[in-house]
Structures are given as structure tokens and as C-alpha cells.
Length: 199
Image 1: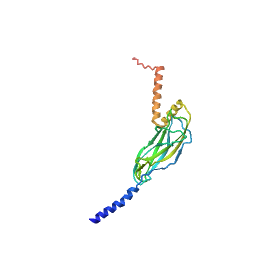
Image 2: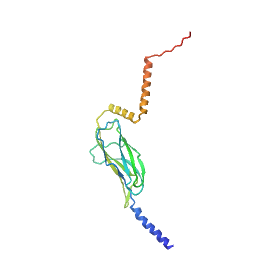
Image 3: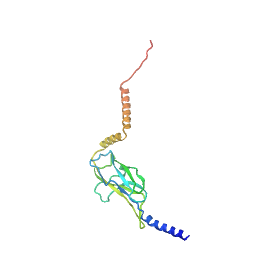
């Protein structure tokens, strides 16, 4: 019985340092994304994907989002402009997740000028260090410029962007709508009459 108690205490003592040294970590596979061409309000842009890596030694749930520098001179893009796929995910130690990103510049509200933000990946839980919670995160820098424009250009650009995204079905819908309009116009100006005569 004494050997079992000693063995049990030994296992507990060996396990405690392993539990204490377990850490949550995160890394990103991209350091900087810079869009060289000025972006147009109304367009939907596909950004290069962001790779999130679990650099810790325990599994965790992760999320992606935006952060800003407190004293940045560039404008801050609105968080609603971005979509991430997936936003939340689970990673084992050493596992990676590729996150697809889209930037949807609104027709109105995207002021011309230079923008900056951090594309951040972070574990949902926080790491505890001597009783203090520390938020762990890693981020890639995103730089882009919005070109000057107006509402009409924005509406035109958004229409073209949506046509490309939902092709080929968007072209089918546009074709059906144009054909219906053509039939309505023709029916107002041209009348067709078919008569049958009995001999």
C-alpha cells in the first residue's frame, strides 16, 4: 500500500511541471499585405489569405479580426468592411488554418486616402501567467489606399463587381431582365394580330 501511495505522489509531482509549462501560442504566416493599386469604393476585393498557426503546446479555439495602432496617422478601415472565412476555428498544437479574407469597400463612407490596420489572429482563451491574464495575439499589417470617387462611380463599380462574383448566374439574370424589358417595349409599339378565316 505504501508503494502505491509513493507511486501516486510521484506521478502527481511529475505532472505538475507539465501542466504549469503548458502554453497557448499563436503565429501568422504573413507579416505584411500592401495593396499597391488604389482601391475603388464599391468594389469587393479578395485579399491574400492569412495563415494562423498554433505555436503553443496545447489545443485552443482561435478567432480573427482587426486591430489598430492608437497613434496611427493613416485612416482606420471599419471592421464591417471585412469578411473572414472562417472567423472562428480550433487548432491542435502545430496545426495551421488558412483564413480567406474579403474587403468590401462601401459605395459611401470610404473616404479617399491611406488606410492601415492589423489583421489579427488570437486564441479565444487568455494565457495565465502567475495569476494574471495575458491576451496572446499575432497580426499581419495591411496597407491600402482608397481612390477618390463619387456615388455614381461607386454604384457602377459595385454592379460590375457583383456581376463578376456571381457569374455565370448573374449574366443569366441580367439577360432575362433585359429580354423581358425588350418584350415589354416591343409590345407597346408593335402589335401582333393573328386571324383565322374559314373558307
